[in-house]
Length: 424
Ligand SMILES: [Fe+2]
Image (cartoon, rainbow, N blue to C red; front, side, top):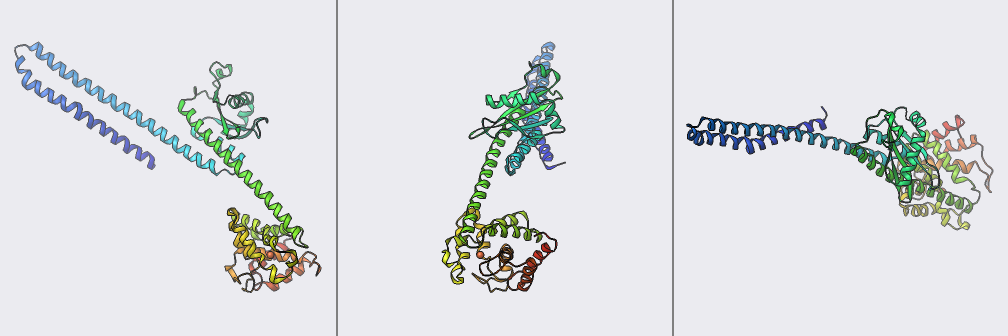
């Protein structure tokens, strides 16, 4: 027995006991007292009238029977109420779980798929569908479905579902396949509810049953309406995340373009360092969150150069401050603040002789150690005003010579493995 069922059983037993105690104190005890008083004081006075005596006994027994019937009726009603409360409680738990799942969905299609699955779980209908439109004037498109054979069901009932979707969005209220609809005669039941966003309608969510389980119950419609409201919020959040991703991706593109134009001989350097860092990071088994952080830090590793005068770019005493400047720039941006320490230490040496703080070994963030290698590789492999580009073999020799002093050996080994497999 699961804990929930166990707690339900204890609750029902307690309620039963409460009903019995109430009945006992409120009906049985007064009835026994009445019987005692009648037997002691009333019946002896009626000894010369046996019919009246029998009548009095009958009245007392009748009241007793009525009381007993009331007790069983009360217990039945109580148990029905408890069952309804249990069902509502289970539905609330399912809706809460659905809400958590919806809030985790990272983008619009994931929300649509997740919403269809949640509606199916909560209502137990045969299939659920979510249709969306990208703009008010655009047509509704099926974006998510759930249920066994949902796709085939959609195709065989497409006209009906498209009509319900359209009507729900146009009327801004739930729509049903009515009993007077000739299609309802085939034991088909269906309903659609609009999904409302702040700036209009996203689309609609629909449920379909071909097994003819009768009209949707009010509690089923309440559950679908609640899920539709939660789904609408999830779509708004996913849309916001999409806008945020779009914003960051383009802002980074602008910064990288400005940076590569600001520093001589580095067209494409930031992108190249990011690509190489990503490959090394994967080779070293970094997880998705670390890889994402590494990617953005690699793209922005020299962002501090934007605040260094071009004339000072090749002056070691002057240009070294770009690490601290970059760290300060990024630490002010809350969403990028975790990139700040990586950027700050991308010129540290593994033996502690780098800058700006002379950190040593694993005290240097792993992402910084990876960027240090990727940065050096890209710099060595491109033509500079002072020297010609090195070949990959020559670069690997340089890296191996610097392993353990300038570079982290494990990063150099990962880099060499990528080169051996021809993955650079
Ligand atoms: Fe740098």
